[in-house]
Length: 321
Image 1 (cartoon, rainbow, N blue to C red):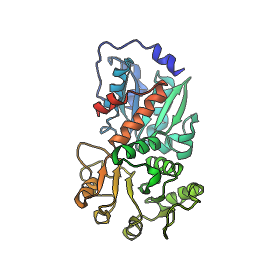
Image 2: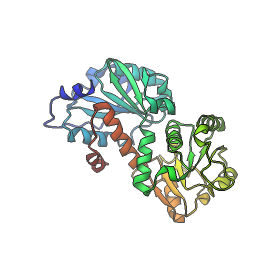
Image 3: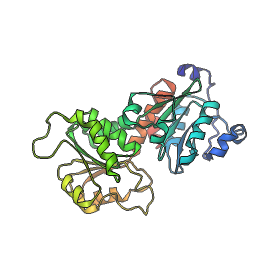
Image 4: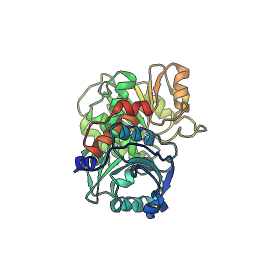
């Protein structure tokens, strides 16, 4: 089915890109809103905020490389607008959509089918539209694995990992992937401790066997306070920020900078033109750090493969980023 979508689209000869942000009101009157856009918009990302997203640059580069005559755009969709926006996807001639903050968990209950990755995480970041049905996937976990391997030259299975924001959609997906990889140790941190504890209970079977010598438990859910974090970070290799904290230059570090040590690797899923406060704090103590661009690249390539049933042109996507 997906392959037929590609073959029915003529090869692009001249691209007239769009950098606009669209809204729910635009989707309600899509023929008029997108009438002058060529090639037509049939892919995009829903988020709030969404202006910062680099997905259009990356995905449009992939579409041009593969000579697929469609475009990918940003859609500013608020939390209370998601259900309506997804309904319009069924009715309009869209191929698919990505979801970012704050929609990943909410969308899971509003789709028709979910693959294994989305079902495990209880969150969706990629939707494919087929026969007016919304089919959900989650490429965040696999994208995270590939990013850690790329940025730090190490596999997640060999690491002790602490996830900040484990209760959100991105944190859920990363936590599940760490468990599936049988990482050495996993610490879940969330503002609402009950969410982290519930996730830990679901992941417990993956950590039944001994891997780490010493007193630290292989799987823990802890409160988000300095004393608890300090007690955990001596037995952690990789700190992951899976929260939106850092998207604005004025944002503080999600954890006190004084808790970061030189032996830590710090991965911030937030990306931007400048380093986040968390990554600057890592630099100051000599810890290795990386932002979320590599994760965006790899999860975006996986999304492209889901939509078009073909390998993504990852080098073209990397250049665009």
